[in-house]
Structures are given as structure tokens and as C-alpha cells.
Image (cartoon, rainbow, N blue to C red; front, side, top):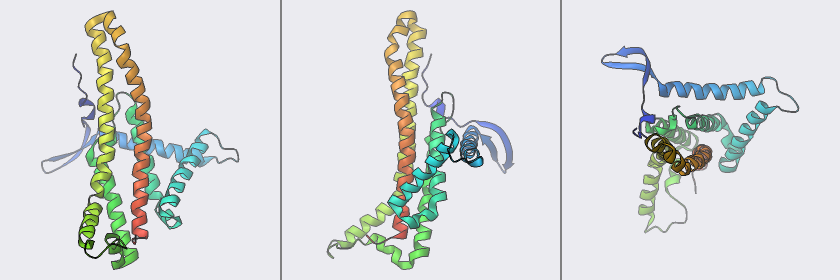
Length: 251
């Protein structure tokens, strides 16, 4: 029996949609779990608020808590003016959170474990901030790269560092989410594989010896649930901070 922790990240074609030249356009397992995540979010938000009551039920409470959590995050990091970006931040937070939670279920697929997905979301945030910052502030947006109170003799160096930091935001924004989900799922797969490997190769003794990696697998699963939420929260809060820079570019 072989332990293949990377196999869970394979992208498989479910069916072919069409073909452009030599390139096949296919509906993949990644696409399926993206649609599933959106369906779960829609069910929660639309279904939860369909029959609104004064005393909320479970679904309504979850929908309202999700709304208030994201709204408070935006207000505390981007101010009341940042609430115009609530649909963007809420969509990003819920999509990442739900897709991460679905990915923890055995034999499913973790959408955010692929850099192309996280990079796309990070670039969406980056260009939104850049375009809105220039639209709202004009050339004053470039004050973002010139911190106040910096001595003139080190100002060019600080401006260069600020520019590099700004354009590296999509990299850190995307890699943080991708790397955490990838590493967590590989670790889970390795420890879970140890349990099955010991049991099938050593029989009863192996199953007894596999109790430790089984306990670690359970503990790591609980940790991954926390990481799934934290990574969605970190992505959302960084988005709010970047939006605040577009609204208030001066330091």
C-alpha cells in the first residue's frame, strides 16, 4: 500500500464542454466544488433569510452572524466608507470559508489548495484597490508610496520599498492561503495513511500501533477546521486593509 498525499490535488476532467483549436475546455472536479461551494452559500443566505422571523432559527442565525461578522470586520479596518465593498469582501470570505470546510471532508477536493485559484482572487483584490484608488484619489493615490515624516535622505529607499511591497501584495495574499491549505491537507493525508498502512501490513499489532497516528489525525483535523476559518478571515481582513489604502492613501 502506498501513501500518495499529492494525489488528492489532481484536477480531473468530469466531462468535456467544447474545444478551441487544440485546447479542450472541460468541466473539472475543481469546477464542481466551486459550484458546490456557491450552492451551499446560496442555500445558507437565501434559504436562511427567506422566512425571516423575530426569533431567528438556525439558518437565519448563521446568515445574520456571517453578515455581521464581515460587516464589523470592514468597519473596523476600512471605516464606514469601506462598506460599499461589502459584497466583494463577503463573497471572498464565504467562498474561501465554505470551500475550505468542504475540502476537509474525506475524498473531496480543496479548491484553495491550487495557486491559480488563490492568485485569481488575490489579483481581483489588487486590481480593485488599484483602480478604485486611482479613480477616487487621482494622483494623490501615489501618496501611498510616500510615508509622511520620513527624512529626505532615505525617502528614495523607503519609496522603493513601498512600491515593491505594494506590487508583491498579490503574491503574499495568494501564497499564504494556498500554502496553508496545501501543507495541512498533505499532513492529514500522511498521518491517515500511516494508520491504514500499519493496519494492513502488521495486522492486529499494526492497528494497535496505529492508535497514535489516528489520534494525531483527529487532532490535525480539528486544527484544520480552525485553519480553514482563520485563512478565510486573514484573506478578508487583508482585503479590508488594502481597500482602506485605496480610500485613505496617505499614511
